[in-house]
Every structure is written in C-alpha cells, then in structure tokens.
Amino acid sequence: MTRKFIFFGPYITTPNASELRLRLLPQHLEDLASRPHIVKFGGPFFTDGGAGEDDPERNYGGTFFLMESEDHVAAREIIQSDVYFKGGLWDRPNIILVEYTPLMGYPF
Image (cartoon, rainbow, N blue to C red):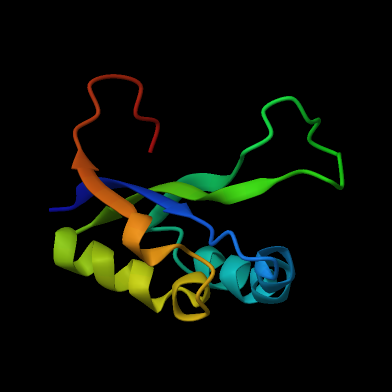
C-alpha cells in the first residue's frame, strides 16, 4: 500500500545557486519523468511573489512535490537519489518530507 508525502526542498542561497540549478535541471527533470508512479505533482516555488511567470529574473526558492511511496524511508531514499540533493542545490538541513492524508480532491 502506498502512502502520500509532501516534499519541500528549499534551494541553497549561495551566489552560485542559480547556475547550479540551471546545470542540474535537465537531469532533475529526466529523473522525475522516469518516476510518474511516484512523483505525482510538483514544481519550483518562488521567493518573489510579484514577478510574472515569464520573467527571466524570477527568484527560484526551491522545489515542492507530492509523492507516493511505501514508507518514509523509501520516500527519503528517492529524495536523496535526486541530482538536486546529490549536487547540493537543496538546502539539506531545511528539507521537509512529511506524510499526509488527503481529505478531499486527491486527483491521482
């Protein structure tokens, strides 16, 4: 039986974070695309609430997604296998991975 988890991975805030994100992004997207049965929904979040989506100066704050896994250990292993984790883009001490129970409207 699968359980549902929310992942929140803020990015590091060093000057090279933007370049690191761009360099790792293709592999990150490829990895996520290979796991549609696990990672159900998600994307980047931003720290500049007023900027438009097509603004090249957008401030990326991190990644969030909803995922399914057999347990918390397996979910954590999936996170730790991601290139953003291995490459040091996610601010590891501030990663949040919690189980949740959808009460309504869970479409997948």
